[in-house]
Image (cartoon, rainbow, N blue to C red; front, side, top):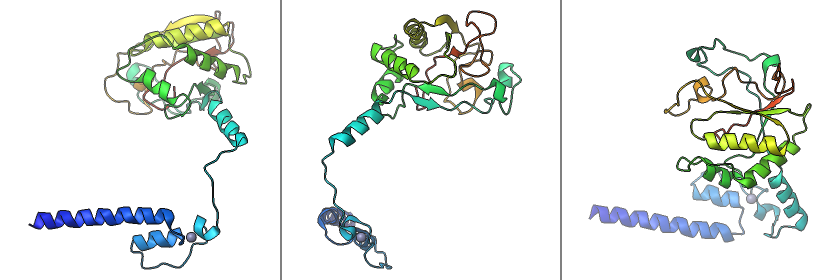
Length: 251
Ligand SMILES: [Zn+2]
C-alpha cells in the first residue's frame, strides 16, 4: 500500500510539472519569476526586465533570405583549421625516439585542415558513418574528395605543397591511401606513397597526447614550416600529409 501511495505521489508530481511547462509556454508573467517560484526560491526580487515578457521582445520563426544565405555560406565554408601540436606526444621514448617537451618552432608543423568535425551539421553525419567502428575500410567517397579539394583550394598557402605522402593506418589503410592518391591526382602533386607505422596496432582506448595514439612517426615530414622534402621527390617544397583522426572530433 505504501508503494501505491508513493507511485501516486510521483505521478501527481509529474503531472504538475507537465502543467507548469505548458503554463511557462503561455504565461505573460516574467519568466524568471515564474521559474524561481517553480524552484521554491524564497528570494524572488521581482521582474527580471530581460525576458521576452518583461522586455516585450518577440521573435518569429520566419528566417529572412539574407540570414538563410549567411547560414548556408557559414555551413558550407570548406574545412576546419587544426592547430599545430606544441608539445611532443608523451611516450615517444617507448617508440625509441628520445623527444619530449616543447616542439621547436622550426620543427613545428603548419596549421592543418580537416574536412569537418564529426559534430558538424555539414559533413558530420557522413564522416561519422564513414569512420564508424562497424564501417569497413573503403575508398574515399567522391563527394568527400571533392570537399577536400575545396578545402585545399581555399587554404591560402604561403607556399603551395609539392607532394603528398600518406601515413599508413591500421584501421583504414585503403581510405587514407585513396585520399592521398585522389588529392595528388586532382591537385597535380607528386604522390610519394605511404609511410607505414612501425609499431603494432593499439587495442586500448586512446589516452590523449600519447605517441602511441598518433600514427605519424617523427621521421615523417609534416606539412608546413620545417617540413621540407629535402633531397628529392618533394622538390624541397612543403608536403601534404593526409590522415584521418578518429575517434576525436575532426577528420
Ligand atoms: Zn522577466
